[in-house]
Image 1: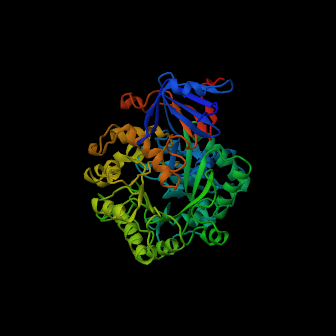
Image 2 (image 1 turned 45 degrees about the vertical axis):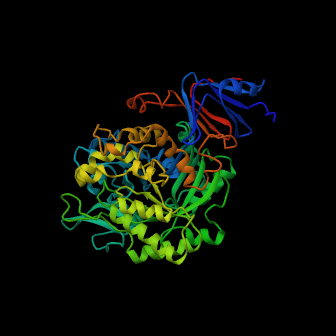
Image 3 (image 1 turned 135 degrees about the horizontal axis):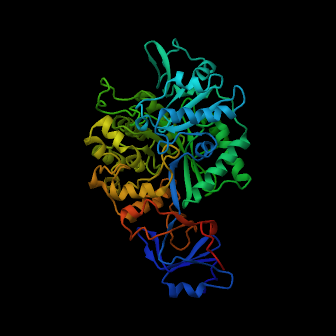
Length: 543
């Protein structure tokens, strides 16, 4: 068979097609698909007068990164909100200064929203108090979220607008903190909904802009696909409508798998009558799983654990639902034919999630559903065995160890964190762990995930569970093929075999040959989606 001339050819470097396919020297792309792969001499015959040549010059190319659990819309919106990133903000004064800078430019009464602070990294080693926010914003409502997204602090104006005072009852699955009989402003888990419901909705056009701006940032890092793990967390059903509008306007920069928020505060009452079932759509925008929450975050000490946190008066975290409630929700969505994405970080929460799927399986078999445990942080061997039997998938964020590992040690001791996010155990069990970022909770840079998986080091250099290190090839596969598997798309993307979608990332060095410390500063030089070059950092691609 005579093959057509290629639209794009990559050559002179290491091209990782996938774990099964291995490496090749050159690869040809035609009409958005991989045309052929092999030796440079074999691919040269496919170069024509219109072919774009990418000379890798010793660099490497991989399938496009699939960030299989993150929050594209919130990330994009965050680009225009108060940035309190823990990597930059180390003092309470800096938190307040950044909030004040936004207040000074805001209209009277306009809401100020921000996120990504980490009290563990602040000089005061605590959350800000509402009175401290009041000093810089006495008239504008303010709400700032901790980096985990499971808690935040409101100032007095925000609490007033939300109708919250010292007599407000504790909401189910949430906690409103008081000290000495007064509100501190800290809202945990579902208590946050009381504040966010008081915020005025944004126009769909603003949400579309967030999707576009966030997606453009992602693909400049080699990210070609994402799963928004909670469509509905921003303005309910508007979140879904914004994705549809972005797709219609051709302003959706990356392929997106939408996990629709379920439960009592979710969007399923509107999604279900519209026929929005798992798999509806195309490979650029597709309805995915239903998202349910069981617990919070380990760093915030709200992840539900079998055994108490250190120095927490016996606290084992927060359960969002009772066992019976979660069982009912999981059974309902399973019977309707949906894939489930169940947020569970603590081992007790993972127990609850796995048990709920087990119970649902007794009513309607779950085989082939690929129900997911999002985060799946503190997994035990018995849970891994049960997940394998039920065909479940862990969707972890290895970067949590890099960014929060030392905090885990502080709140849990050394033993449990060393056993957390066990990538090697999952890989060897054949569970296809979806290595992802949970951005904007953590940095979206895939190099930090890759570095952590091959070293198990925190950003302070602490090694946690070195026996769970995996190879660069396995780690890249977890960030590419496994993300595709988790969204039922492994037959069209996630590897660079002939016939697959031509979603490709070219990095500025050979990630498979450099020392681990050289992975962290690596950059994406070129990103290709559907055979089109959408990012060219150095402007090097020529005919």
